[in-house]
Length: 203
Image (cartoon, rainbow, N blue to C red):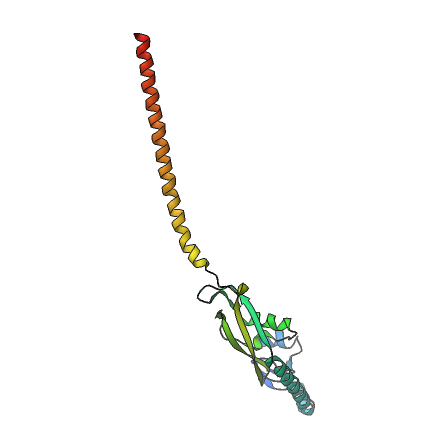
């Protein structure tokens, strides 16, 4: 299905461009949101008459995108994450996390424009590309630091834990045997004493 874009759409096209998309995507997303109109004869005719207006809007949006790209390029984001001794994160940092950091600084960027191909899984300094407009891209610095400034060694503690668990039953068993032996010994002594008393009475 062909539609005419009324604004820039990531991974699709720029304002005024005629693109071919799936009917469901057009009817359920692009058209209801005012991002596109059906490329029928009437709208195509209007497009031809509005080229001057569209070009002016393109220039205005590009100027706006370039200004935002310049502002973003000066930003340095920092996030703290739980990490082990080797510097590997217990979780990961995704483009959604980067978006939240940008939101905190007052930048409303669609997460699809944050070009983070793979989640970040280690402590370190990174450069993340952001496509501000269809043909305007910038790069920001992202510092991933350990939570509280310290690397954790929980993995080591977890390895030691089973040994402690294994040792406990052995000690308990030893104590149990000792208690049983004491009880048996006491019972035996009690029997001998009873037999002695019985003998004295008979005599």
